[in-house]
Every structure is written in C-alpha cells, then in structure tokens.
Amino acid sequence: MELRQLKYFVTVAEELNFRRAAERLFMEQPPLSRQIRQLEDELSVELFYRSRRGVTLTPAGQAFLDEARLTLAQAERAAKVAQQAVQPKKLTVGFSICAFNRVLPEIIQSYRQQLPDVVVTLTEMSTEAQIQALLNGTIDIGFVHAPISHPALLTVTLLSEPLVVALPSNHPLTHQAQIDLRSLANEPFIVCPESVKPDLYGQFMRLCQEAGFSPQIVQEASPPEVVLGFVASGMGVSLVASGAEARHSAGVTYRALSTPTPLLEIAAAWRKQQVSPVLEDFLALVKQA
Image: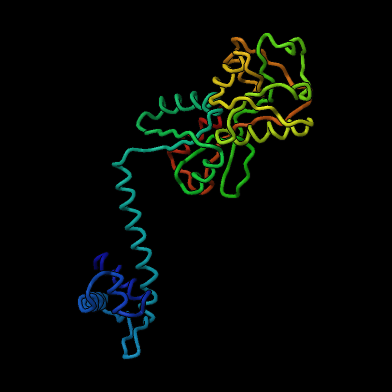
C-alpha cells in the first residue's frame, strides 16, 4: 500500500465520481480506476459499490476513509517536521518606535545570547498593522501601544508612563512645577505624525479638546529624538512619554501635567493558538521584563 493510493482513494471517496476525481488529481481515469482496484485487491475488501448510477462507499470503504485521512495527515506532518529540522529557526517581531526605545533592545540582546541559532527579524509597524500581521501570521509577536482587545490575541503590559510637557529650557512655564494643559492653548506644538503613532496622536488631540482648545501644530516629526530636538531649538512644545527625560535632556525641560492623563502603555501581543517553541522561549524573557 502506498501513500499515493490512499490519496487516490480519498479523492474518489470525496467526489464519488471517478472522472471528477481524476480531474482533481490531474490524471486519466483508467489509471485511477486501476490503482483503486489494486488497493482493494491488496486489502481483500471492496471499498466502493460501482453501478451505472454512480459510485458509493461500502461500509469497509467508509471505515477505511477515516483512517486513510489520518494517515495522510500524519505523513504530511512528518514531512514538515523533517523539513523544519534542517531549516533555520526564525522569530519575526513587530515593534513601534516607542517600544524599541524603551524595552525591546534588552530583550533581543538576551534572547540572542541564549539562542544564537534563531534568526530574529524585526519590522517597525504601527499598532494597527501589528495586530493585522499577528492575525494573518506575518509576525510572531508584536510590541504595541496598549490597551488592545482581540479574542485571538494575548497581551502582557511591559511599561506604563504618564504624559509630560516638553518645553524649551528657556520657556517661562519651566518655572512652574506642574502645568495646566489649558495654559498651552496658544503654544506652537511639535507632534509625531498620526501615521507613525496614531495612538499617541489621538490621545494628544483628545486631551487638547477636553481642555477646550485645538492645538496649533507647527511641525510634525519622528522619531521622538527629532521631536525633542525641535523643542530644544525653541520651535515649540510637545507632549511626550515621561521616559523621554532619561534619554534627551539637552535644551529641554520636562514638567508634569496638573490634570491626570491616561498612561501610555507598551505591551507585547501574540496569537493564543500558535505558540511555537521559539516563541515560548522569547515570551519567557518578555515576561521577565
């Protein structure tokens, strides 16, 4: 008995028509009929009832069909396992700029030290693009702006930061310990483009609207270091995550907002049902972080 004979049998059983089955298998009908007859002879059972009206499965054929499908599925799985054994292990990671600046480098460095044989590919993507890439299997794990909610995804929050005001160091408002957002109504703003950080941009616009004004945006820039460079030059002010102060302090002064604002959260997200051993090892480091 050969695997190709099982494939022929399953196709005929699904079509219940030798001509259509032969077309599906890209072969002529007589050779297909001969292969099925040889299989029946080898098994010493009749798998199909044949008549002028068509083809139907015998009880033996019906019982054999379930086992034939299992055998073909197991053979396909065995082939994949063998192929994967000689292929390089891969991990594809999506990330936002904020995640890369704050949490990702240490995780990637630790992972590469522990598993140097795994090829890690990183791709910068928006949160929305990462969610779609996770769902269609383009990436294995994403580092996104939280919160996100999708029944097919699991997340773990890695970092939570409040928004603060970034001011040129010679700005009059630097003398205040905290700043009321309404006092920035007439200030020129430098922001990260909506296309780059839609979550942060949306939160910024909502906060300004709740404070009773529409922000005067004079410059869009990315990444955050460029935004802060423009602030330091005196071009305007910006709202940034509090962690920016540790990375860029030259010419910029940071002040807390007097009104509490939602935290900016960075989370790792992955598919519930498709966790490979390579991803499991990576998630162990993520959860430690």
